[in-house]
Image (cartoon, rainbow, N blue to C red):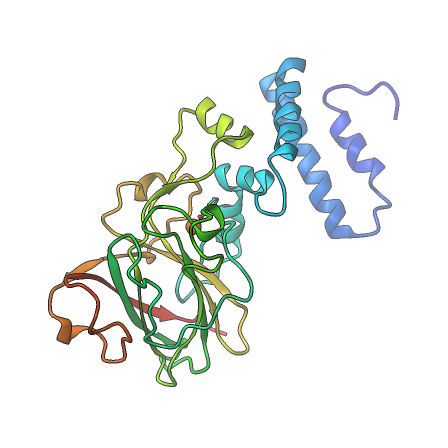
Length: 289
Ligand code: BEZ
Ligand code: FE
């Protein structure tokens, strides 16, 4: 096509792609280019402004390695990771949320009732609950992958003083769907903001805080794993999560328990946790199959 204009360039892009081998890939790329073209036209983008965007993506490369991915952080802070999660979410069951960068494969097994806290820094928390399928039957055989930050605000991957799998675990629920474990109360923390994604936050006048949260992937037999996270209802960043991960149904009361006799009977650290402890109850539900 010759004599392109600001309005015909978008149709030209679609026409150039007419022999794309995959219809879905063509649809997505033509749509993406169309939205980018509209963005340029509507904002009358200058060379310097587009140059700054390219420069941020180039700098993102320098902040990306096998431990940190600045491109995913951009996706998270732009709300795209959360939006992709929400448009694909099941219509029923425990809501899903974003994965974040700190999940590890092959975390150690934690027996039901086990302890992750091990007297480390922070306030002990006892989590207990039950998981049921969409008809209310116990979701037998479910494995919960769990991970969270330490009481010092850092994930094991960010902190050489922690063992590499500290606060990472896989727990198999009992046949009646119940589970319990002791851990530390997670704390609010800032996502890494020393790179170009952090520059974007500052340009927007935004902060880098995430409310405290406990991550979980629910691996139920025969089901797609459900990625989610839970938040204490008293966290001051619940309404301004930097990565837009908070959903109704994932915010829970964290209560103070002073009576040791009321803790779950199978808690390995039940006799040694310093009272009072925080408690949280999770009522997990699988989506309809
Ligand atoms: C997190 O859950 O820890 C997280 C999520 C997105 C970006 C950075 C951190
Ligand atoms: Fe996290």
